[in-house]
Length: 198
Image (tube, rainbow, N blue to C red; front, side, top):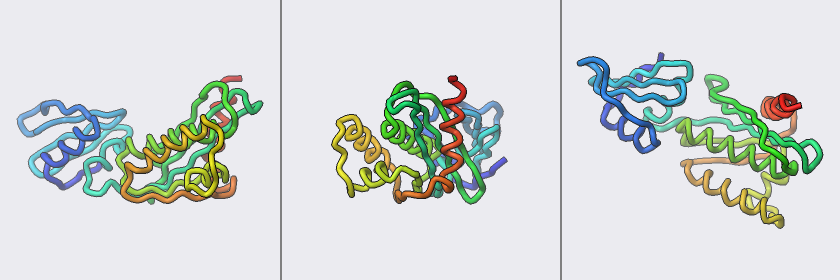
């Protein structure tokens, strides 16, 4: 149960800026409470205590400097185009903070890769990280986003614009191509999501 020494008014402002709803405290000692997807923050006079099944949902938003994460992503399509899915994983020095995989309908492999990157960046933003190192095994996506290669397909161009909008939300970011074995967890999550639909 993380305890963050901070000014509760500043913490409240950060949470409100992130769209988290604040409610009155349950006791005379609680200044306010906030709830988001498995995490509950309770403010006292000079600290905020975060509890629940997923405290990282709020701790990075409350703490000064949202911290740094490695962001892994992978998309999969069976048929190209065909049924598609995404997988993503957020990792800090404390280990895996969050991960997910889901089916996304009929797409090409490159569309699935972009969808996975977008979902991973949205998750990193939701968790309040201010610095991210993004890693994926699609050289095409990495080089298109970095501006090294053109995106001729209109759908991919639109998704590249969305990725750049999301990257602009972070104070610092890097984007690099890694071998598939380094990206294994994101790959597994995408394939597991595809298998669930069979």
